[in-house]
Length: 168
Image 1 (cartoon, helix red, strand yellow):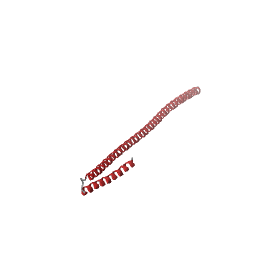
Image 2 (cartoon, one colour; image 1 turned 45 degrees about the vertical axis):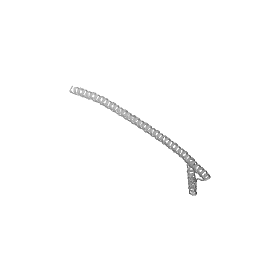
Image 3 (cartoon, helix red, strand yellow; image 1 turned 120 degrees about the horizontal axis):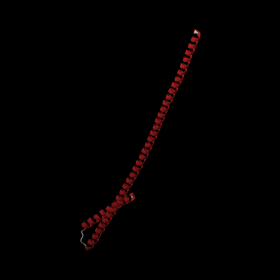
Image 4 (cartoon, helix red, strand yellow; image 1 turned 180 degrees about the vertical axis):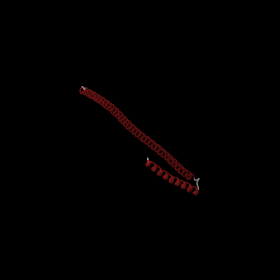
C-alpha cells in the first residue's frame, strides 16, 4: 500500500508538474506573442513615423524647389524689366539728342541767313554810297574788309552746318 500511495503521489506530482510546465509554456508563448505583437506594433509605429518624416522631407524639398523656381522667375522678370527700362531710357536719350541736333541745325541755318543778310546789307551800302560819292577810299576799304570778314564767317557757318547735318 505504501507503494501504491507513493506511486499515486508520484503520479500526482508529475501530473501537477506537467500541468504547471504546460501552463508555463502557454504563458511564455502568450508573453512572447504579446511581446512580438508589441514589438511589431512599435516597429509599425516607427515605420509610420519614418514614412511621415520622409513625406514631410519630400514635401519640404518640393516646397523649397518651388520657392527657388519662383525666385528664379522673379529674378528673370526683374532682369527683363530692368532691360526694358534701360532700352526706354536709351531711346529717350537718343530722341533728346536728335531734338538737340535738330535745334542746332535750325540755329545754324538762322545764323547763316543772318550773315547773308548782313553781307547783302554791306554790299548794298557799298554800291549805293559809292554811286552817290559819299565814301572815301578808306571807308570803301573798310566796307570791303567787313564784307570779306562776313563771307569768311559765312563759310565757317556753312562748314558747321555740314558737320551737324552729317551727324543727323
